[in-house]
Length: 366
DNA sequence: AAACCGGGGCC
DNA sequence: GGCCCAGGTTT
Image (tube, rainbow, N blue to C red):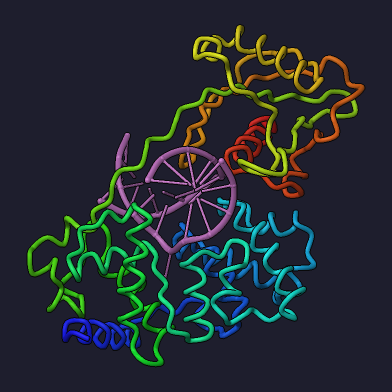
């Protein structure tokens, strides 16, 4: 190994042991808890994860508890974290571990990698952190740090780049220190070697950082731009109950797969054009016809209640909320429910609808 | 390789 | 308003 590599590994490890943050999942050796933390941390910041992690392992302390829990309960503990397939896949995988591995998180690469929701990064993280096996765990932080230290100009948005980074990262792991070293790499990326303004003055490996030497640390890593999200115009019906349903709103459950799977929402549909969306009277009429023909729910639009927006990674919902009343109280489809303000907590909502309904019920109280 | 899959914090 | 975040799955 080159002297630059040895210096990097040793100094980074020394720095980590001195400066590492005290995080909940660093206080445990339970492979299941470490696994949960790694899934939550996918595309999600540490500060966001902390309260979710504590609540989750409090409610599902063992792998068997999670395996036995109702899926809705699991989703409720994930509400607001996003990427809900992570929760679904985690429970699927945990059931698999109970059934196939006697409820012990496997410590072999092939077995761990075969679990639902466990990709190359998470497999490496579990193996190294829980079992101290010399496997790389290459995430966005690690690619940024390695790109700079070794002045690598490969586009980190390309899948092939991660593969090369994994070989490099593995070659850097000090004997018997895989868990701490991998966490050190990520910790440096999170605390010092940050995306916009790296704090090279506080970096324990800056001396041999090749990007730093070239004065190019702010140009790296190279990352091609993602496609901008596609705007979609949607009309939503806020259907207010009367009689036995007074004070309640009609909501529906989404399908069990795809976007926001099995979560609850206001009935809504994509407007056929921006023009239909833009004229409240036209839009309301179109929405009533669409919901009647697609779901058999007959409504009478009453007016414009407001607009909101929901941004996903790949699309943007422009949502116009139309007030409405149900034409016939008799029948609504199986996946519809009337909910009042006290029942919001019994359902799992995407943030956009949880906020919308919360604000609606508060405003109506005045 | 590209598209799909949330939400929030930061600049 | 753009960028990024302890990514994985599907096509």
